[in-house]
Length: 355
Image 1 (cartoon, rainbow, N blue to C red):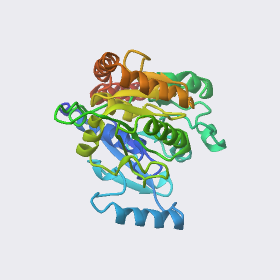
Image 2: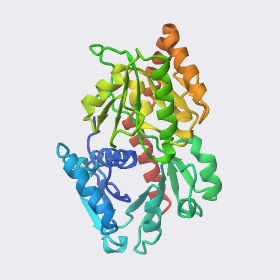
Image 3: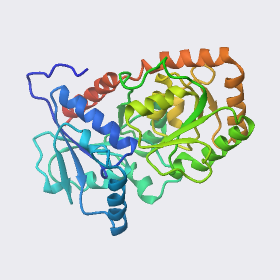
């Protein structure tokens, strides 16, 4: 629930995104922007226009046809405030002391190029497994920076020459994600993402191996993408609404995450909130949330036999599964969106006081 709006006007904030889409970064930015608006901040989201290639425009058009049940191909339609489109950020007007936040790697060059008076802030949501020159350069040099995970701070402090102001984690809304006792929990689940950072080939291999060894255990997956080859045995749902995604989580005894890298994975929080035992790779984001043997199981990245052994442990030991699920329920209480908004307010106040 939003806090009551303060009668005194608060800062103006512009969140700059690289575009609309169904990425986690866009979704969590929209949630945070709405929370800040509810607390009295003047907030808008800015996205570039006219940068898509002809192929990208065609892909967006085809996606919109497939997703007719959605209001949009992305998450921006959920934002309750104004959305500004720009070719250059200098085209927009800014209030005195406005804070302009570059969300993610590809928004940093736009914010750096802004010449109008504004307070600039970078918001890091993680690093790619193999950064290119642009991705590496975005997080170098002295510019105020925040991130979603404490595990990312040491690397950022080194690259930003000590410019990290704090950590603003993602949150979980337990009104959307919770244990549903009416759903039969009988399977293994995963969120499929074809990006190389998510190690999709590892996920496919783990699910296929688990199916060969335990064909009686159903498997569930959902995604924004079409089902890839190799998951024909999986009950695969594309673009489920929240209620359907919650049901899929609740059908899974185990939820898998094989990513090479994560900022702070919302899928882990959602799966935990819905009662799953999460088995995750040792990516930075999962290590911020999980404690091996306490609220889930951690497996070294790329260790496919290790994932199979962890699956066997959970399915073969109901007492262990119950203990891990109980630990996960306690963990999610630390990751509410209200707490995340509190931390963001502290950062904004710090920026204003030093401007």
